[in-house]
Image (cartoon, rainbow, N blue to C red; front, side, top):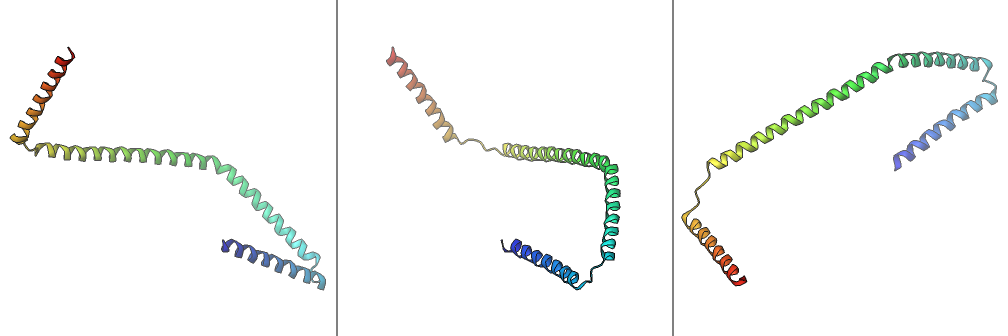
Length: 135
C-alpha cells in the first residue's frame, strides 16, 4: 500500500521540479528558439524510428504468430504424451503391487471357514422359516 504512494509522490515531485526549472529558465530568458528546434528535430527522429519499427513489426507479426501457435501445439502435445506415460507407469506399478499381494495370499484358517459355513446355514434356515410363516 505504501509503495505505490511513495512512487506516486516521488514522480509528482520530479515532474514539478522539471517544470519549475523550465519556468525559471523562461523567466531568465535562457530558453530560445534553438532549443525548441532541437526538440523538433529529435521528435522527427523519433517519428522516423516509430515508423520503421511499425514496418518491421508488420513484417514479422505473422511469423511471430505462427511461431507462438506452433510452440503452443508442441507444448500441449508434449504435456499430453508425458501425462499418458505417467498414467501407464502408475497403472503398471499398481498391477505389480496387486499381483504381488495375490501371490502371497494366505489361506483362510479352518476356524473362519467353519464359522462362515454356519452363518450360511443359519441364513438358509431363517429364510425357510420366513417362507413357512408366510404360507
